[in-house]
Amino acid sequence: MMMEVDNKERDVLKKILDSYLSELRLEVAATKRSTSTLHEEEEIVKGLQKKVATLK
Image (cartoon, rainbow, N blue to C red):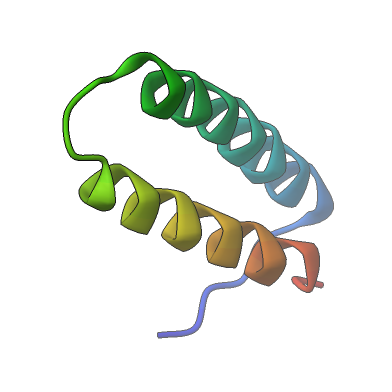
């Protein structure tokens, strides 16, 4: 799937992903249960951050 975004939209997406990743890391650190799902989600968010960084 292709998605076109302008610079402002890209910047907002980056801020959203950065904020969410920060919260997710806090949740991983705070939880005592199995975190494999949370770790998977963290890797997905990191991948999305890389993709957003390359958007033009």
